[in-house]
Image 1 (cartoon, rainbow over the protein chains, first blue to last red):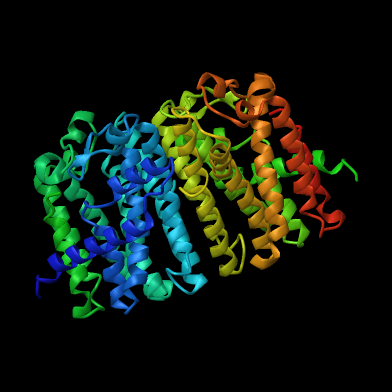
Image 2 (image 1 turned 90 degrees about the vertical axis):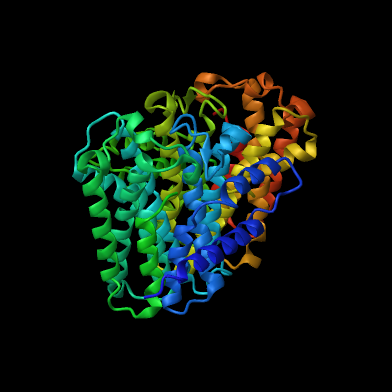
Amino acid sequence: MTTALLPTALKDVAAEIDRQFDRLLAVPDDSRADLYRAMRHAAMDGGKRLRPLLVMATAALFNVDRESAARVGTAIEAIHVYSLIHDDLPAMDDDAMRRGKPTVHVVYGEATAVLAGDCLHALAFEVLADPDTHSDPFVRAELVADLARASGPSGMAGGQMMDLVAEKSRFDLATVTRCQALKTGALIAASVEAGAILGRVPPEGRKGLRGYARDLGLAFQIADDLLDVEGDEETAGKRLRKDGEQGKETFLTLLGAERAREQCRMLVAQAAQHLHAFGPEADLLREVARFVEQRDR
Amino acid sequence: MTTALLPTALKDVAAEIDRQFDRLLAVPDDSRADLYRAMRHAAMDGGKRLRPLLVMATAALFNVDRESAARVGTAIEAIHVYSLIHDDLPAMDDDAMRRGKPTVHVVYGEATAVLAGDCLHALAFEVLADPDTHSDPFVRAELVADLARASGPSGMAGGQMMDLVAEKSRFDLATVTRCQALKTGALIAASVEAGAILGRVPPEGRKGLRGYARDLGLAFQIADDLLDVEGDEETAGKRLRKDGEQGKETFLTLLGAERAREQCRMLVAQAAQHLHAFGPEADLLREVARFVEQRDR
């Protein structure tokens, strides 16, 4: 198996997503200018673009039009970025650095940061519902349902709430797993699902891809916990060692570093196995799994 | 023209929307319980429910299934409520009272308030994209597009940004009008538009309804400015006299109370005229316009 696909794919996807945001977020010549600048600051020129990559790599399995997949990837990234802006607020995690840059509220103030997050949230659904994204309204409506569910109280935002509570109580392994499955896993799963929706794969045909996404999401979070303890702040582009400061239970505190790393490796292998029905066309998704295990940012 | 339709309609719609939120926001037995309680606190048992009423009264013109219209009305109200939660945050307007109750961040803390707003935002789109809301995916996708556009940076949230800037600069009448058209007008227009979408009225047939909604939205905002100066805080259920404190230009400061009241009356009359193509079936919408002129909360 080649390992040369990923670096190029990451670079191409990053350029494509920046191009999409640049088009979506043209700064208007009125008093909303700072709102758009704040969105551009958060959304452009940074991040791994893992979620758009998952949308686009999954969609490519089914020969979906690349522009269509890029627009959906941009919508999901917009949801991810809005959640980072709000999560970084003083009332939430109070973070000053993100993706190697000062956070939105540090540069533009808290009020603009709240609104910039809200606007990226709305824009995501505007893009998904746009006929230019996909000509079939059934596909558009299914994409909206997928993303709304994955980002709301039964998904990402619900997981963030559990995470808030986790700082004040002792979670066991089952609860930490459930919290992370919502907080990070749901949007990662929604990205793969979106690729399958674009590919018009019927729900009964998505089992393998869903298994892949579930294991990948969990591996991603364990790697994130390891990164929080062992990573380099400059490379990561954000503040680390937060879990320890907050006294929060994580996969690491519950399993120890060695078993956590082992668990991550096992999940990555398992994720790849879920793709057994696919040939070399799924090599990029397989590489993504290995990349998640080795992430340093 | 009878004036007996509105009180009953307002009561029925309020009960219906509470029923919908009660179903959507069942409190889960896990650490997200406070998140759901916060959403219930903000979304249930309060508010004029003007936007759902507009959806349902417009949909009724075209004999749309009432449950379908109620679900769409609930989605739009969820967007409105999320914007109130975020707008009341200390970093934004810093308000302690809303709809006669303490605001969400006062009761549940700021972090939960941010997330409760984000969750209502996502839930709105989840409801619109749900096949139970409407069987035709084209209608669902159009509803999502309508609401996303009206609530994002070119609509409500964009207007809130202009409003933030207005506190620090001197706006003229044209700019205040544009700011209010976005901040309040866009979502009111989207409510009427949603009723027309549900009624499968083609865009070229929506002209009268759009004119009605535009004039209604502006009248609503002028009435809001008058309420801010002349209203009773207890009846209004929220803090008043904010515009003056913030030194913000409003319709009132720019026109004076008498001309503002005149302008409001004229807009309400004009709104009703846009409905000339409809018979008595539009009487409820006509009454809504008069209600907006006389609002005290």
